[in-house]
Length: 200
Image (cartoon, rainbow, N blue to C red; front, side, top):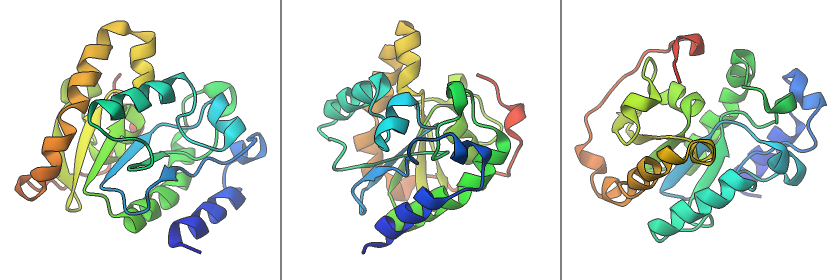
């Protein structure tokens, strides 16, 4: 059994949060264990909860299209979320839920050891770009623990706000060149900050 498979089984048994009682399936994530690119979204929605897989609803279909722009598919990357269980009614994840799930996300990052972490939306951005707003930093990168972190809007944002589609697609097209620039990125050591400080 691979380290990632063993971790997925641990996540499936997790009962740290109240939302574990209302989930249909935990959604650890999926993709290549040696992926160069790790995409991190917010949390599972209804479709993901039903299937136990990340990004399988409308936002997931759009993410597949975005991957195709850079000649990739989801078998070549790894896709995960900040939290691994669907919050009731698709509400925003609570700080306690994010904190409880951080152990799982940190271990996924350790096992996969990606060259680039792509944050999709403000909740994953908050871990790697504390104190920043997504409207200001989308399409930009910095180093976090020797890994490039690249901020993007969540694909679902384009489904609700068509005007963001162009920005999301242009940001996606920057990812291949980032892979070749990994050694040139400046080091940044962000300090933790409460999620409540973040803006949309």
